[in-house]
Length: 203
Length: 201
Image (cartoon, rainbow over all chains, first blue to last red):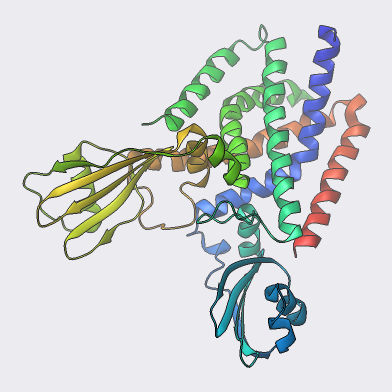
């Protein structure tokens, strides 16, 4: 590729990738601020969560299924990422999570009766959850997300991250092409690499 | 508006260069956070053998946080104290730096501290930075100078990202040849985001 063609390609890639990612960048930037400033009153969500608890009766046939969580969710018409499964001889417990909604299900395996506790966040809570919702289990990293939507969101986050890496690298190339007009770029890039390196390698 | 073009272009370039290493840290860490098992296999954590050290004249301080800091000072260690747990005979806490955790457990009867170093590497260090200061344990968070500085740095980073992205839109608006394709890019991004939000909610 000719240098001029490469320069034009890099510039166009930078512009259009940036525009494509713009709203996602704003979504994650602002939710990052919310996560780091939990004390901001206007965005409080925990105190304003809505909780409800109802008694449920699940058909026993659902509980003898090889995947009882899926059958119970189908019966209760709930969907989301299944977590914290606990099964004993008498009870089945699990949590279903989607952004802003946490449902805890507890069922007596002998009778099919149980409870469904639902916790719903306000819009700020939902926004915060979007930032961290990747279905990964810190205690068991080998466990993959089990909800299709989680996987779609997770791979979208991957795509955004790769897009931002490309945007960054293209910005370096674009600056390098005009470095004589923007000489301050050397100092700024060196300073920012130094600051980032300080934080990353502070050992 | 066009009279500001040169100024905005220079600011976009300089601020963009400044945030670029941080964008790389946050972006790479997203990949590590989303594919933890893969990166764990790629670079497993290394745990060193426990090292025993006697702390001469150990005295509990007014608060647990101060006690932990005093232990760190005696052991010549530094870092962000994550959380503290106590029993009748032990005082334990992990101390984090990006990619490195030192687990400290002090026997309060014998004043002997056991230190176990867990090294997780640079990529995990990036995820640590990504998640800090974060939403959890807000009362403890920011007990080291490092974390106080990082808290400010992340805020500054976000405000610069907002400025760089907004100024990017401003610059694009004046590039007539790129306008049509730009509208498609922006529109596709919006449509995809709306589609995802409809799926999620």
